[in-house]
Structures are given as C-alpha cells and as structure tokens.
Length: 143
Image (tube, rainbow, N blue to C red; front, side, top):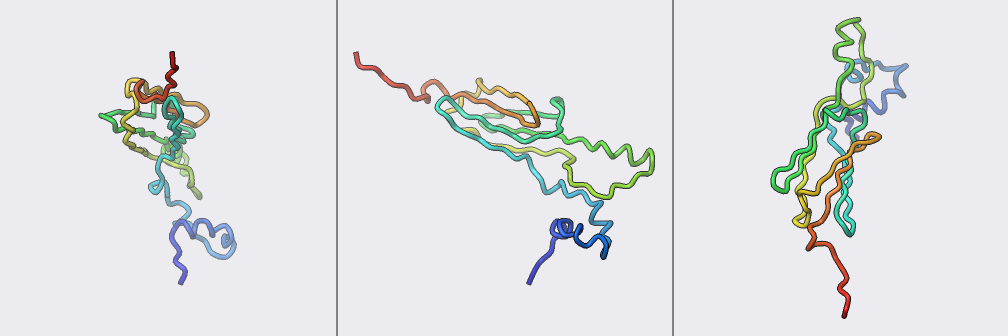
C-alpha cells in the first residue's frame, strides 16, 4: 500500500500538471513543517554552531541564552502578503519558508557562556563559543 501526503503530491504534481490540476495544494503553505537547520562542531578551543537562515535580515534574528539553554529564532518575511491584496495576484506555488521558526539547544557544561559571539553572513548565522579555560587541553612541560 502506498500512502501519499500533501508534500508527496506536490513533488509529483509537475508530472501531472497537464492531466490533473491541484490548485488548492499548490497554494498551500508547507513551511509549518520546517525548522531552523543547524550544525554544531567541537574543536580544541570551543564549539561552532552554524544555522541556515537565508534571506533573513539581522533585525529579524533573536539569540537568547537562559542558563545553558540557547534559543535562536528567525522571522522569514512574507513579501507577498500585502502584494496579493494590492493587485489581486494569485500565488500558484509557494515553497519558500515564511513565518517564525526557532531552535533550542542545551550547551555543554564546558562552554564559557560569556564568550559567545555571533555573526551573520551569506545566509548563515555562526555562533562561536569558547571552552572554559580549565576545559581546554594543554600540555604541561617538565622542568
């Protein structure tokens, strides 16, 4: 038995556009099923977390730290919402993300919370976090 979900039908719909019309499915906003994607890497000195936030303005990104819980949220603008009302245009296909999305992670105990720095460039938000000095490995020389 094969099950088809709305997203499956949308992926297949270009194949059937000439045979079957799916106007209600095409107009549907599927962004509710998305979240902020991220990678976190540990190196000798600390951690680097990289979030994908293409098209998001700096002022639409919030980074909050509560204890060791780090929450990053981003608001993707819907530039078509006002446009539709002005000129009676109809959206036939929408795949780009709109709305507000967030991601929370608990940081490791060895992160120096005061060292967190953020930069946004080319659709990526990069958070750099240093390890606490006592957590950084060091070589002890023999005198």
